[in-house]
Image (cartoon, rainbow, N blue to C red):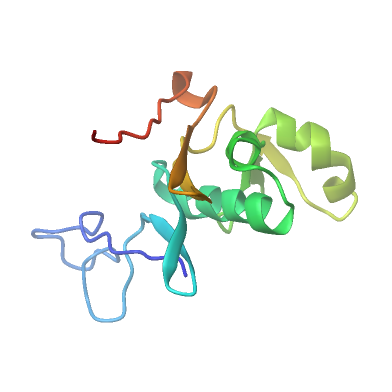
Length: 151
């Protein structure tokens, strides 16, 4: 389940007719998707990313990489990304275009290079009370993730 509870991206104040004004059934133009994965009600992984409109695609790709493609969490987080936001072109990192561009272009996809998409961090419960914390190795200058265990 992807969650989105971001009201700060609505337009507030006097803006008659603005399509981004809050109203029942509307969603803001930006998104948040901090995601907690549960297994039988117990947390097994948490992941999130900044990036405005690329947040949901970033989180989704990390989850697909981890659970569908069998990557370890550091690999899933570091893998090249693409993001499609209902435009004629799909924004994609160079590594994504290198790995998948030819096959997807043959199916009609058009790419707009984007040097980096998202800047995620994640943690995974790996058993025996251990937690693995992972941050971007390169995007936005690389990140930092650690587990702090009180003594």
